Image 1 (cartoon, rainbow, N blue to C red):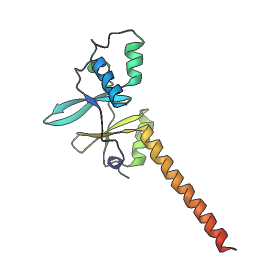
Image 2 (image 1 turned 45 degrees about the vertical axis):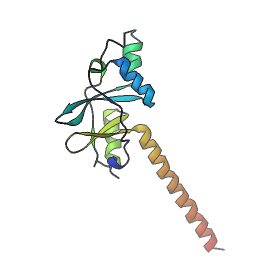
Image 3 (image 1 turned 30 degrees about the vertical axis):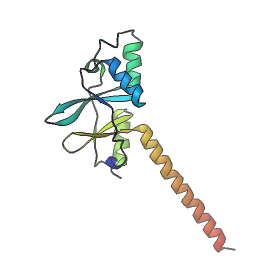
Length: 149
């Protein structure tokens, strides 16, 4: 299954010069744990960084810094790992594991942002698939019992 079919297309984005205060307000407003930092290049939205709620706590709150004076460029993780929308589920899981990330921005062939895939999304999808498999096993067991009576 291509990642483009399961990723969340509703991504909260900010420009690099947005303050941490403004970004955190967007996170609260949209009930998300991250924002993607993007640049516009030739009319395309290109992801260049990410910041999570944990980043805000560890880098800003814990150090008692003023979130209204610090920009997202200052705190974003700029070694951004992305995945193409045509990549498979297994490839996404392997990449998350290898890089130690919980979120993957999803991009098209040109590097334009098209969504985000979170570990939570994968867990939910895999749990649904496991439930379907468990139902199949139960169905087959009932079928066998009925045939042997």
